[in-house]
Length: 306
Length: 202
Image 1 (cartoon, rainbow over the protein chains, first blue to last red):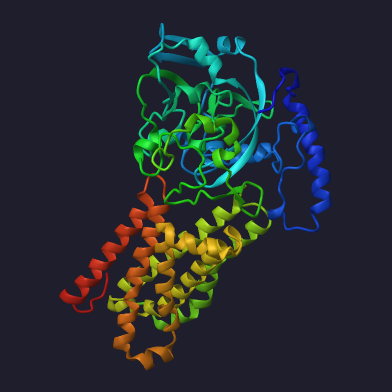
Image 2: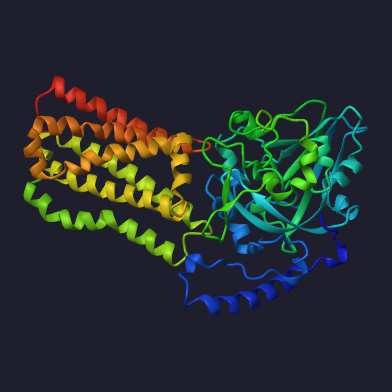
């Protein structure tokens, strides 16, 4: 992992301006040679991200990242989250810290943000449905929040819970999933420096469809592990429930690490379509973060604990 | 009473209407207005349209059991062939757009992903219906044999619905609605066959 300095954070307006310029020149040069469907709508990345972008990766555009989402709280269609989330009010927001902690408490999001440093993190996101994106997130390590929460030694797992507001989240009016959405991590996974709590992307506050105001980003796991609009964080001593894995345990494991050798009955996990690209690309073990995270799972049979 | 002549006259218009969605989707695909993952959207639309058309064929068969709607059966072949057109586009987009002719991968996909297995079986079983769709073939095979072959439509639709059911992640209402319609039509058909003469629907 590369080191990130907080001074490197670019305000949203400069991303957009730079990107517009890059896109308009790029669009001009290829507009006459390719049908528009094949044009990746992202140009070169802003130079400040170059050192964070891995070889062969390009940032997905703000438009791609904010219009193609799985967030069943707003509906099952990919465009439902961007089209049906306008009623959702991510402000004010507070987070309940519960379970095996010294003292359970409720944390105001603004107070929390005053205690942490927001960093830029460019991560690949790999959906279990075999598509992927590259996203420039802003956020802070989950470990910082865990430090603030000060869990007891008996805490072995962390469970996260999305807010339940059927009046603001139309998808929750139907029992598509057992609401509220829950997810979990083992303590060592949660403490891993790559595990991020995100507050924004492209220098812009998170939009409702991306999990405003606070969401998890665990880049080496399938996207559904990265729970959105987190309202409660619970420390527990045994493996907690996780929504998809409860619903279909044979399809979605608790760990759900990106693994190109363990296939889902519906989707091959050997390849993926990067949004904006035509040809599929091979899926990387742990989504390309093998070097950083493989040690967490070294004595586990990944065919059983998928 | 709908006359055969009226049906035959309106056939070109109906055909155009049935083909229209495919032109729209392909147009949107080419000019980039099917969203950021256009291949998935295109495949879904083409697949669902196939299912709708196959169910429509069954509805028409059932309705044409009533004497005053008999002429409707003149539409069956055309709609069935349009369904075949849609499922072919669906398959082509899977082979070309989704996997870019990576046949070793596709073969594995057909064998290993149950939803692809069932979808592919449905396509294969639709082929004999297409090949025997001409008047000549009906004569050659005799109507009795031809009819037996064409009962395969039920199996094709069930495979299509199962294909759809398996690929749906949560909330399986939509595939179950298709299944419900097919079951009702099937029993209606049996009922008409054994318990009633041709009657007019009022």
